[in-house]
Image (cartoon, rainbow, N blue to C red; front, side, top):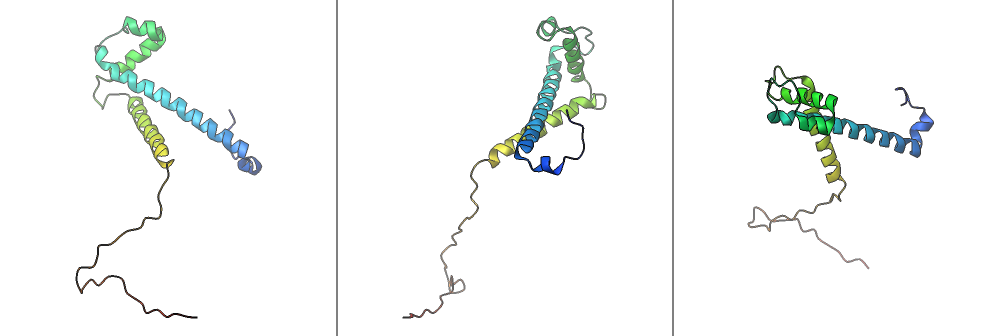
Length: 142
């Protein structure tokens, strides 16, 4: 991965470099989203464990492996905690999932055609106090 810093102006304007940076950003966004979704899913499994449980369920060990099952157990147990004692990472993961989902949804909506010029039709005038559009005199010119 490149070190952070200024991008040379030639690389900044190069369409291939721009596409590569955008792809790298999309890949990082997807990785962060997947990690955050995993944390949120693990926290939502709190109902499958007891608050004082020390060992992960055997199904988790078979599915995720010993170390990942222990991590999942720790996050799931946080679901039983009050917000004041809950690890802040669980809340951050929830916010990340929400933000990225909303951003992806707004990108999908903005891709469709947008109507810019909208013609409004006003109601027909109903009295002398609302005569309608002014009528201007006209001349025929040869």
